[in-house]
Length: 263
Ligand SMILES: [Zn+2]
Image (cartoon, rainbow, N blue to C red; front, side, top):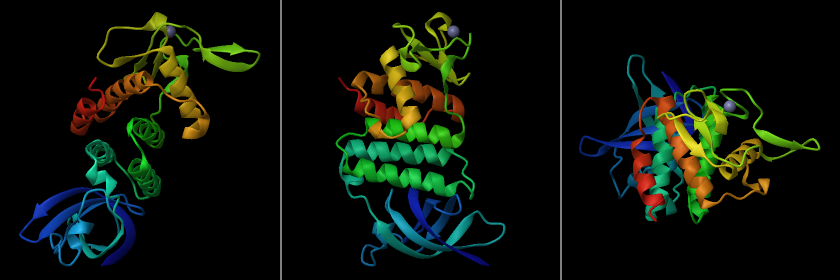
């Protein structure tokens, strides 16, 4: 019987028997695993705190052949991110990140990249005022890891270059009218190639410019700040993008959307 030791983030919890909980975790070393955490409901032992959503624990578990569930032998709390469970908007964001990772196929080889992405995102979200920009950064990095980040250089339909090039520097989108992100083709449609389709979403030039700059920099220190309109458009466009990629709507995104763009 092989025993694995790894840090893991709790993505999902499910009651099991009177005192136990089934945890689904994203491990740092071995992809996602589900296992029974015996005594996971016990407040007195401190186990209940380790069986909360989004906490990071140190796990020791063993795998048996022919069963999906691992046996959790040891579980120690490393990081609990209290703000994520105290603030409703942060809670919804964290739920969204969890749901999206529950949909992804994550191999042991890639596990560390996904684990670090989620861990860093949870730290940022804990300390931030709002989650919209953190969500966008998470989605950008996730698309990279999944290998499906959209092509933002040329129109995906007519192949024309989308940017103004002045003295060897790319300055702004070529046209000052709306573009579209096409989820099916995995790229941008120039204004002349825009179509009516449930796979496309409008991106105004400012949103496209922010998208491209952030995709290149992948860090918030790129100097360019998004407006609320940029973030809202990109939220809608990427929801369509992920819906196409996963073949379904993400439940938590609907809740998040209702909560984020009320006005
Ligand atoms: Zn075009």
